[in-house]
Picture 1 (cartoon, rainbow, N blue to C red):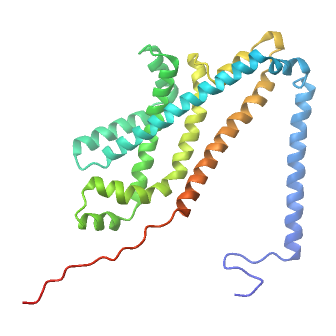
Picture 2: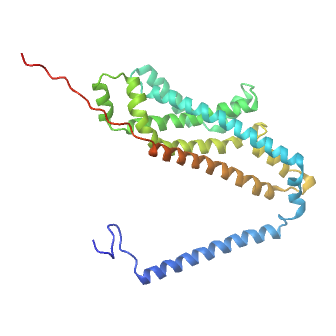
Picture 3: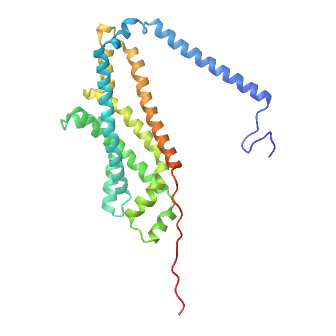
Length: 281
């Protein structure tokens, strides 16, 4: 292959490189102008006035935000653990050889996957009269667990059939095949989808403010609707949004670290396999 071309595309020449640099500068200028316009509008409407930012200086407001953040993380921790367990159980049910178990698991997964999350949370909170955190965690578990059940089932089914057939040929039971052969191979492929769904669960904890659960967004709402501080809605958003984004990015970073650690883990050493051959008589 020549030095001036690639298998997929031609290497850009001097004119193409200059054109690409021009496009990059234009795009940067447009984005900078857009950001400048937004900042100018915020300044023009008084969103950076000292009175709107003064609440964050008070210790009581800081404790309120920290308590809300802690409640958000607590609800997310319970919902994440229970969703993973729910998804694993019902994915196994959908892969079961027993028709009744498979049908029941399919019905449960499809029902809660199709049900709007907010409707489930309100129903659990109002009809069953449970505590706000309990209602929120159960709703998040049922919805995200159903989605994860499909992720797990799809991941296992994506493993080449020959892997399972070879394990069965060695005399392994189905539980052994699932736990020792199929799931470990499917885990790496499933990890991005699992993390994406956990990020969704983390963001959906904000729905707790609708049922008066004192999570992070609820704390922000109490500050933003305070007339004593001139309704600092935009400052509250500018404080809370980066924290939500940071938590989601941290979760994605952890997943990438976990995947990298799995790739770097030492492989199992090959062991010789002996096959008994019939002795000549």
